[in-house]
Amino acid sequence: MPSIVLSLIIVAIAIALPALWVIRSISLRRNVFDSGGVAGQIKERGKRIPNTGGIAIFVALALPLAAALAGSLWLDPADLPQTRWTGALAAHLPGLASSARAGLVLLGCLTLLHVLGLIDDRRPLGPFLKLVIMLVPAATVVVLTDSRLLTMLDAPVGGAWLSITITVLWIVAITNAINFIDNMDGLCAGVAAVASVFFLLAALLSGQWFVAGTLALLLGALLAFLVFNFPPATMYMGDAGSLVVGFTLAFLTVRTTFVPIERWTFYTPYSTTTGTGNAGPLHAVLMPLLILAVPLYDFITITCLRLYQGKSPFVGDMQHVSHRLVARGLSRRAAVLVLWGFTAVSGCSALLLRSLTVWQAAVVGLQILILFLILAVIEFAGSESPIRKAAPSTHPAPPAPSPAPSPAPSLP
Image (cartoon, rainbow, N blue to C red; front, side, top):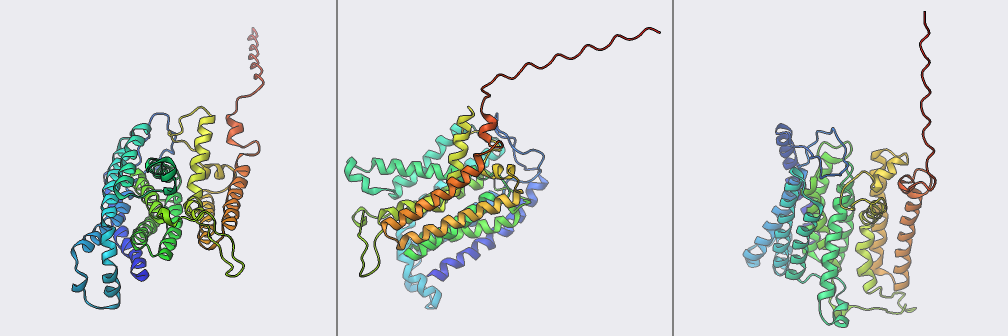
């Protein structure tokens, strides 16, 4: 089954690459370029680059997923020929069929967000309207698929309302965080692709084939898109792509880390005999946080920075972590590659949590926290800090000297 899942990466690439080429050609002929944004938004100007790449990402993800779900519902495993691949597929068709409801709900929510992004890419919507619309698919997918984080909170609070609320907020936050880092060539697609690799590995190790297959499709679509988006980009994904990518990752993190309450273990002491322990819920909570540390860091810092400056946190500007690294002297390509590297480092640490004791998992989480605190010090310390630039002066500036009177013309 792992070989079938990994082959879906190739399937998505084979769909996305020609779709991207066709969509880019049509967009160039019809002058479909990035819009100016909402009032007060600061964006780079003068780039005649299509922002329709998200259509191909959505198609490469949705079409194979829809075909797989249809096959799981309509195919009889006994009718499949007995080969190595089809035999493995037949054995897992009932399991895939059991995930069909979640898959169909996911497809419906992705379609809604994709349409929202297409509209916003052509005629920018207000940030609060978009946020309200995002809450609809987030709440829908949580309630209809019973995908929830922190289910151990249900008993103390007397119901599932708190875990549902936390999960909805998580999905909206991750969707927005991925949307926020779509601010520089290759950044959003690259960070999401690296994160998808680690979530895919975690799903394969857990035997979660539906989650792994969806992640493989997403990874293939992103790799194909990077052919056109790696700096210097010739195509953008737009909100039609970033919202789809963010929501998919957010939902699949919930599915990957969801554990029934009876299997949660808060603490299993370290055994000197076996040399093992159990990180229990600590692993489930920390793994998605670590893998998505870069978009979450950008989301938190840019929100705090805009609030400090008296701006709306939802109106875009050019103060994201990528822009701040460029302001520190890095080239745009170097800044993007550095953030890819940070995502890879935090992702490697996240995978280790599966085999660590509670205190060891806490140390790994602390290590990543210190890493990003160091990055924050580098970014915000010194005279070039955006905080220092935005801070009001404590001393009033001296009045500008009045211009000296011009000498009277001399008489001949």
